[in-house]
Length: 431
Image 1 (cartoon, rainbow, N blue to C red):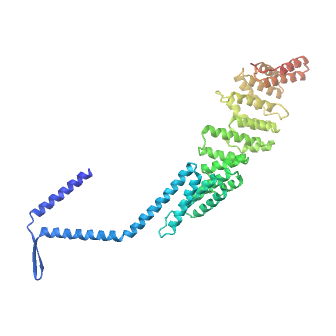
Image 2: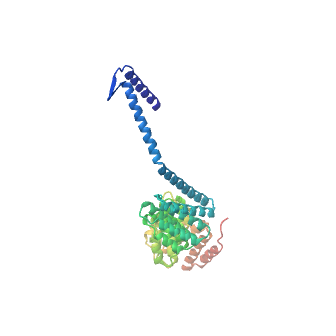
Image 3: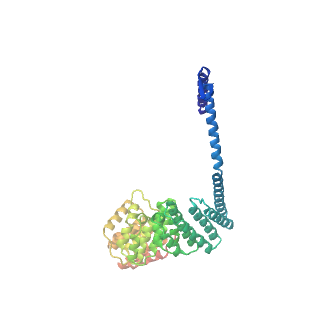
């Protein structure tokens, strides 16, 4: 379309010129004493155009001749710049292919060429960044070759080249610090690696790469709380899948709780967990079991188990069978032993749940234990007998028969106690 429009315009100009020149009878007389020159106006216009074109071509030729040295310098700089870029590509490709010696030589060759170019009259405007990246590639190759001295030397030189205050220099410095931390982690120098990560700016320290390095250091140095906090940030950055994040947080929370030795430490460890982690069944159950094991308050353990209890007694229970059994077992421990008597409100909750599911043996067991704790002997014996006949887990069935035997001994019914002890001893897994 553009060519068609140009052809039409050229045709119009030609037609206009033909019309003007074909009917133009004007003449021009030039007086140059003692001469007189008569010519047509058309010839004069042609001569003027010819003179203009001649002068224009002569000026362009002169300009081209005088610019030859500058063009030669420009072409030479372009050739050197392309050579530097080719060297960087060679270093990257060799490093990716595992040819670390060639990668190191290619990076050092880039540094030599850039040094020669810098000494000339026209250094590259991005020479510092180029040298910093070349030093980084050489350091990566040296690290892969187990040459720690060369790696550290190239790393320091790279930091020195990126000492400017521009945004690009700052990005290079942060990248160098993170790579240096990664090298130290691989060398198992975790203290130095953590110091490198601490020196990062606040924004760089929250990037996924820095968080992954911090997570590795925390795991290797057994800093469970730091690893847990870092895993939360990694989860927000979607560094892992949702299922992997939940599994990782659950494992770290369990490790954090396992480090507590007394009730105060268990409570402190629980408070340091995120509500999302506290809502995990495995975490809540482990916290309650750890609290009871360390001699903590049964009321405290029951408060941690309350969300799971609400999920258990909901119209559509969302707890797995193993978690339900562990929940009932942990609550039974809260009502047994030397713990202070829990709030009587729990008896009402358990009774309501048992009435909703009257055939559930684990709820019968829990209701019987709660009634026993609140001295409701008749109801306790009834619920425990029903539960003992239905329970499938041998250890739980033995527990029910043992409690029935103890209750029979308390009321001096030796025959019933002997029979209950016998059934407790003979309890076996159902096939």
